[in-house]
Image (cartoon, rainbow over all chains, first blue to last red; front, side, top):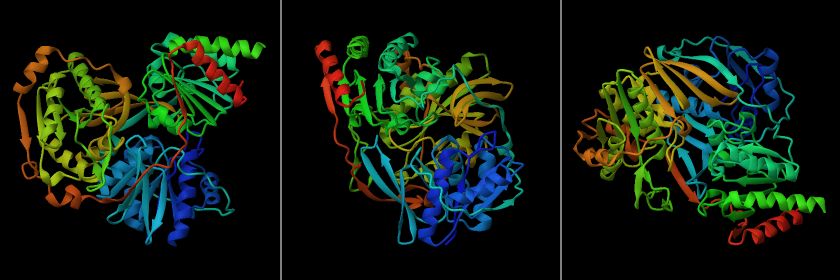
Length: 325
Length: 262
């Protein structure tokens, strides 16, 4: 039985990503059940201290490829494929996020390995890992096993909890890897550019989220007015952020922020999985959407099927009146 | 330059999707359509062509049963010059690993300068096929691209990643999967729809494409569905149909008050 290898993503400042820490914690837990070890691979310039610190999440060893750039998948496929072949890892595990999908998919092709994605839970059955994965807009959950090793597991965003407990320090080993010719043909020009105003949605207790259903950029005013009345902030879906309607800093979901406010009022948001993973832990979810088949109505606490252009202004007035009284 | 667009036939958005408990696969009966994300890939190809790049040909490529021909017709109506349909009973039940390999074999024979596809399919495997295909083809790849400019054999791409927007230069030949924010796909003209069936369509079997049969289908797949379960039950929320907006708002305010949210 080989170990579990986890890719840990870090920012340009060398700080490891929360979903990666969750994946390390999960791998350490599973490795314990399997009687093996969890190792980490990182590229670029994570410091010795930061790498050793991953021991606190259960990693025993950290492989660091300093000369390999962070932020693009294919060079990391080269690094991980080499480690899996040389060291005999049985599984590769990724926390949620775009790079994990790309690296995991590349490894699948390179190693002829089975892959599962959007995984929300990993179980041990008969000494092997089994991925649990919701499918068809979360209307069913499938257990997927691997025909042979290695198996690639790509988690859903926030699927794996960060468990900091151990006081252990991971052993750090630097490695050199020759990159494939095609892995060097994509180059990062700028990384992590912030677009639009810097807004803080993570500390808000009440959030009004706006989606495509608002119709146009100017209609975000309806969401802002309601948020003002409630004393909350405005968040947005990826679709409207990419369309330039609202700042990136307000984006919730797969590539945006994860929030858990006391109230999440979803205005014109269909509730696609990519958005859901960023807000499903909200205490109270209120959805307004004109499409009765929108997935958000499957997991909201109160759903209003109707025209938000009619409802939001009146709701704003009513909230103001209530608060004024 | 030659562009191949990967297309997929998916159950129509209005169809209630389910898993067939017998085969443990998605039940693909009922109304079907071209994966909406793939229409963005076709539109991106058309915009490169219309933007002045020398595009000799746009080829739509799919893998799927006989019915998938309709998705190819739609792709051609949206601008593809011809299409290739990989269709063989031996492919049924292929997982991501097997599907990516099979599609790569078809693409290899076309030797395109650019492979475009939608970043995800409406029905199943998310985000992954582009990167699988790219590694088989030994081409650089980027997924979830929302802006792309072709220039001198190079693509300047933008996308959202974990820490904000990344701008990445990619040399061609390359495999790029696009997000739905990249463009607004055009509607096909009536003439294009009528003419779609007359454009060349090449149907290939597994052996035609040089695919090793033991690497595809259920037996060639590296994963196996062990069980299908209902999702964890969450208590269903209350749903209000807005008929009288004043009344609706009253109910909503009451709900907010009960939960001490105002």
